[in-house]
Length: 400
Image (cartoon, rainbow, N blue to C red; front, side, top):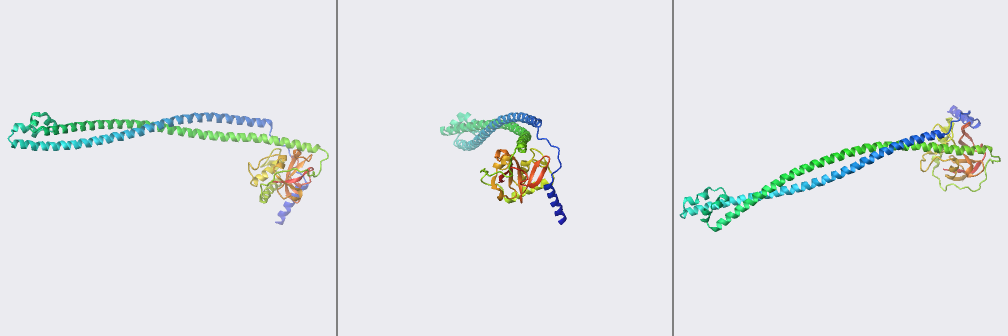
């Protein structure tokens, strides 16, 4: 364990007192790279737009088929109701016919008794034979001469029975015919409803497939757009910080620490000390791993100064939209200002070549005891160094 600590201390001191060997400068995103990303994004957008048109047409077809299916369902429900009415009518007519038939049978028995009485009272067999052999009211009504011998009252009764039976039979026949017709109509409408429902279901499947493709294309488009915007952002950040750092190298009269002229940052902080410690640990790990310095980069293998700050706090749990990739000057306004004697590990330090916010060109992470973790430059790489090793220290730290 002691041996390990000695090796670690030697490594840290080596990083503090020496610089990494010069590395070939990795170019920041070029205009050609950004243009290529734009072309990829445009191609993805064209594909997504074409798929969106297909999806819109499919949805329109689905809406049309849904309307037809709904109309078919309405007709089917109506046909079912009409079938129920026709069935009820047929049932009622059949019941009425049965009741009438029973009444006619009873009338025939009555007539039989009347005929027997007439014979007993002196009538001849020739007169009553039609009464005994008749099959129903129709035969009896046709034998008017015989019926007349039974009296006007009984003749009227038989006529009424006959009329009732005729009406009942006609009603049952009409009801049965209506029921059969309605049954056929219902079956036809049911078949049409099934066709409409099946077409609607198939179209819904097609829409779902097209929607899945559209979702995938939109995901690809968003990914391509993110690549393009990231390249543009990285290039803009790199150009700005590179310009400011170059300006710092040629600006005379820079102070070691600029005087405090009242710059203000946020009024609140967003982190706990535990999160700040995690950010420090992340920055330390990148320095000890000898990661390279590359303009506009935020890891995982290369970093610039603000890229290291962004990645460190992202690893500590800060995420967009509360935490975003900014340049050094913007981070100064995005954090709460604390005096240099109030610094705690994890606070950010800013370096300016004129002592103004707009000329801040470098940002680091305070490590404690007057030291900092930083992504310094292409030749020097990532360092553990004194906070006074760079001129132009702003008179405040930024607490995230």
